[in-house]
Image (cartoon, rainbow, N blue to C red; front, side, top):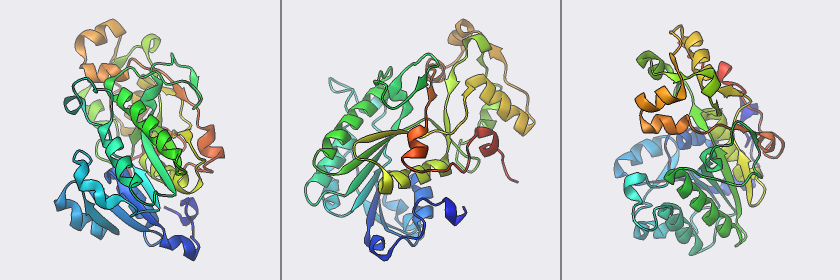
Length: 312
């Protein structure tokens, strides 16, 4: 990545004493590590001791702890000046009972951070799914949330907890993220689905989808950590405005594969898995004005037409 695309740029010496804690250091966390290498001290929380050597090799100091076991998080208090929270809420199986809509992982993290010297800034990676179905309308961050799935409900709960945490003086930012893709990301292109011939909806029933390249998302996380406004929500998506079927048609043409078959919605409901149908039941076009104007992020991959290209 060219240096002029890094949102941190050449940091003054005083910033090199910053300590960034990454919680949930998966693919996006690793890209953040790559982008801040040699600029900031980074700590990475992992629940797997086996990952320590890999995280060290990537330039992070690993900390073993589990968001599902709050007692393991006590050492996080006062350890970082900035925190990037990328960990998802529990899945369906891990959040039953009366509090199915809560995200205990985020609550456990915030309680640990609150015990001593809170960070200057905290960025939480949420999902655009909190908006629910917007019937293809343009969606700005001021739109009220209307989550339709249990997982999106838990994201809303996490957002509320992060906002409350920000009342203590921590500059909190919430990033609402759509579909993440990248040719070098596991499952990061539609190629496998195209090879399976999975159908998409007919044009008259189709829904708008939104996308962001994984590298641009990593840079957005860093921009929010250093430039984000307090208690601010930001949509993190590129400039594409495609319906789902058109997205897969575009990818098929780029990869030299057959375009997927089209089905009317009633036929799709009878044949496709529920998980896939849930993505086909919500339509929205995210507005990324804040991403560009407030976070000053220039997208390296402004459309999926450029970002989907697989370099041999």
